[in-house]
Image (cartoon, rainbow, N blue to C red; front, side, top):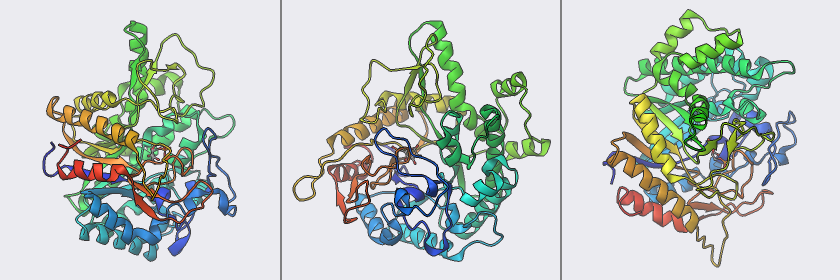
Length: 477
Ligand code: BGP
């Protein structure tokens, strides 16, 4: 059981479920020019927005036109909160305008009003891989300091407009994905950045990271002035990296690799750069534009809570050197190996509920701030049987085991957890693959990879199961 104010919910991101990619004056974002991938085939970044059919998120599940009915279903499910994002390009279609797009603002007024009318608290991410394409093309994305100001303007516009409707905010979704500089998709979606020939990707990364951390701090400072009751968090992807064995070399390999996981949260929470990063800047001779004024800003704009996603864990072994690093799970880790003790999903994501308890303990111990699990879920192929029955027991098993691990962390270990939002509460377009067939929802959407289907929504078995978990505050697992 959790306390009465615990935020049980579902999580979504504008570009993965709204559709209406150019409706109501919306401009294109970086993700609007990414082709669909397929099982085992990576998505591609293109520059050709006209080739509409390649981009699954252009129509997604068309929440843009279904939001009233969808929110009705979320209310029936008993959600206390819905985590979603505001598509930056609905508000500032190109990103560098002085005035926002009123029609875009009105869309979110309507969505938030509908949520609130159904007793569902909106939890809002400002940037969930939705940077305006114009800012990426014309300014080089977050490698340009000017983009810090554009983000701040966007954040202030949202804070002012929705200050009486939204209390819980997050600045950048999974800001630390781009630590994997070997995968261009993460740099592009996190920051609108493409590394040029001859550049050192690690040096580019730290400059971009600095501007984003600064943008986040500026947003926190501005938000607190607009409404001191705001709770503004960061959002990081947390994949713990276990040592393969008790060999001290493996232990150290894990410890050092974990710097990658902690780097962004360390700055967001503490307001200064960790010593291991400062040493790296010095050792590698990186030339970074970081001013005294910026550092003062980082110190002032620290976050109130830590939002994080948890899907899996990984393992490193000191004496391994992988040649092939295009595996999404282990990409950033040249010394990653398989964990022989746990199974993986169809997409190779290791299933490790204990890792969630471990993560909660580690994050709480390190930061002593409330934690919010804003993504956790099981991507799987769902079979539709008979009269639209979907018996998704593996999803129920996954969610139940992770919620159980969370409850143990709360009650046994004393970790402060604010809430839990299951990822993709209604089926959405998968981010890494661009597929519809990798589904997370407790609500099924009749739409396939090719964009065919009625778009009708159906309850999976997990719908009633999750409803009962929420109704009993975590008792009925
Ligand atoms: C996170 C993202 C989400 C999301 C989720 C599941 O990285 O924040 O946007 O989609 O992972 O990933 P996927 O959809 O690739 O299975």
